[in-house]
Image (cartoon, rainbow, N blue to C red; front, side, top):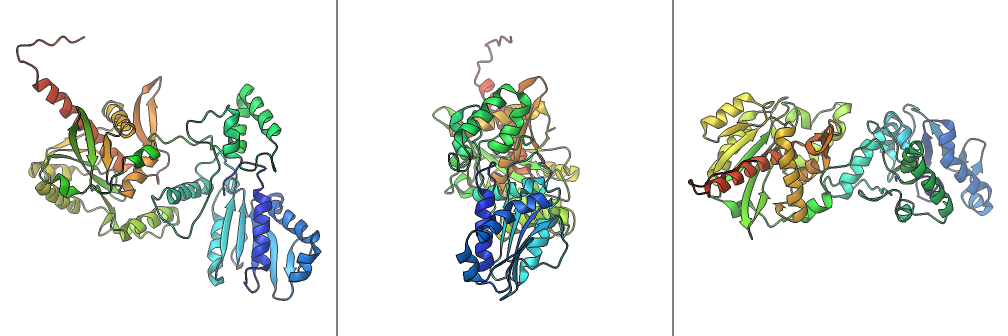
Length: 464
């Protein structure tokens, strides 16, 4: 749960923890309130202890002993206590509350609790937090995982989360947005207090960042996604199939940035409808080496887990070994050409040079595209415009949607109208989006050539 301060997350989680401690049918339940400091660990344990002290019926009914630093049930050995830092192995938690997860520099405590739950029938792990500043930390990583689950990009039946914050584009200085981020406004957090804090933040730039983070739940160090994912989803049409475009020329685009990670191949088609150019991205393919998909590296576990789910869904092609096998991609490209003739194949220069040569041998017309402002800005903005206007259509491939959601726009210093795609963190892959943007760029050049071909050779062009 990610929610601004004073919205009752500690009290609610204390109640849930007490339920797990007493009523969940788990013999010898161990419940922990974990945090980076003792003071923070008590923020959940203290209200739980107070509930017991002030509710004799509760303690009598469940045989709870209220001690100085823990709650215990002698009948079955159950206990509820605060936990600090990384306690090491040994615990067998039935319920673990990790408080203010944004303050954790690593996921050590979280991982220790998760790995200790193997002997429990229905354990619960609950991280509660406000937004923070460290987008390199485990909390922000978990936040992305929750968002992917909520928007359906990476289904996960064992995860649920909720994020209370303002929407992108909301004016943080508008009092109307306060209730959106603060569901307990007027109950546990007073409206007058939030309004006064908002007023102070308007007049004090230093306070603005604190207010956004602690009372609107905005990660101030995080950059906003470039593409509107809601608009992207409106462009989804799962009735689209590659067979509907059989025999139609396409642009076959490749982003082959790394041999050890995900590579992408995108087919783009265009059609004229009511005098406007529409784009169709159908049946993109993604390739990952076997060793990357099944990596045991702790630093890559989240990415590997994500890849494995997509492999099971038939969305990723695995190539054997530690490095990507470009021969597999080439064979797929040749089959694509037989089904939908390839006009040209934009490819980044950092990819496989040999693959580019083989594409040329197959008359697939590889064209090297340097991913700089000059080559990426106009097609990136055209893709955004096409998505917003409904001129873009895709088949709902979840990996492509994930890549699109990870794109952050990096603007040319001093010129906000010139932009290129980047990713906020290495694990936020954008390969599919980059391949798509390169394909859009080639389609735009084709449109310019088509326009020039309609001119009378005798007509002069005035270039201003």
